Length: 471
Ligand code: BG6
Image (cartoon, rainbow, N blue to C red; front, side, top):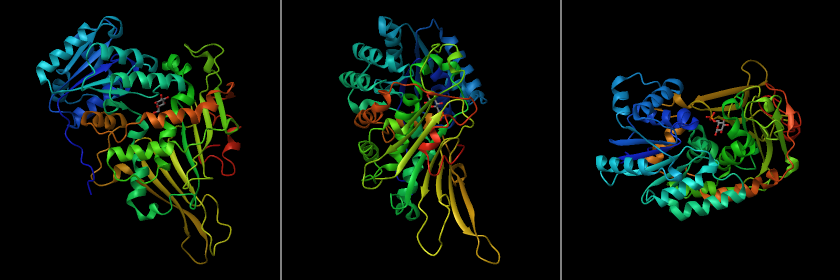
């Protein structure tokens, strides 16, 4: 039943730009160490941190250790940590403005240690505005040939910035070298959106407008933006979550069956359906900003950045025409959860007046993921009374499960050259068009109280069902 076994990665030189920054600390370094613990790294490798600060080698090792102690997995096994830390290097200097010598020398040294055929990987854990200059520098300093380059979302901060960046990146790298990642695609339950459907007769036949009457992709968060105010105030919920994570997940739900599960086919299926996303009608969007956001250090005092977005997306394909895809996310909301729900149309037949929310398939994306089925069943006993029956499958309970956090999964894909979860520029170009009407709005987000479910106006969008969780 193993359709596409993971191949062991070749020796790799992993250059981490922004190595002492927030993303590296919270996500990339923990993901790298997770792979080390699980025995999923190449037999030999080097991780070269690059950053502007004046950081000595020992300081960098201490920084990595501190990141792991804080964000996990804490190195509790001395041997694993010793072998891991012995492969860390730091190359200081401002790579994009003349200070490239240390990094070039570190890569040369790593090649001398590992062999010239070691796979060079550049991971850009830096703000999106810096992607362009850094990519140009990689080309100028002869670090692009044969390398892979990993770009975080958002790839471009506006339609125009996207086009320019795409052109610039393709002037330095061939598309096959470019890994644009979106960690929501690396979540186990997100992948089950297509796996469950294509592997089970139970779901294969009902995945369309005849059986599904609405889809909800809901990602409220209790967290604020305290330690990333500068990034967030220039980004907002539409760019940070909607045109990126939520659109990718919507594509996972809506895709047509790929020709096979080969990476290129899976990628194509996801990207092709994005072209059927209809540009969002501004009347179908609610933007919000939580009270107190403007008081956060680093946020402009009169900021109009939205910390909340709810929107209705239509997918103009024969399979989905007329089915609303409701998307919602926001900061400082009442609850954190990440879910995709398919609300099914009650069957016609002998039961009159079935409740509209009697039958729901729900994917929980956070944590190690779960699938929930809500059904109606006969309440055991005399008479004929229907009652809700729920079945939950925690994905970690599946025999043989070895769940990986999404960043670790995507990093492993990059190391082994698996592009199935990599986003493509044609799909991204289209999502900008879909979002354009929202980006063009004279944005005046509605205020909402921290700890609430966001602006009340969003209830109207989700009518007649309402949001399945909260209001
Ligand atoms: C990130 C966003 O990409 O995803 C954050 O920048 C958001 O604003 C986060 O909180 C949610 O991801 P996770 O790790 O909770 O799945």
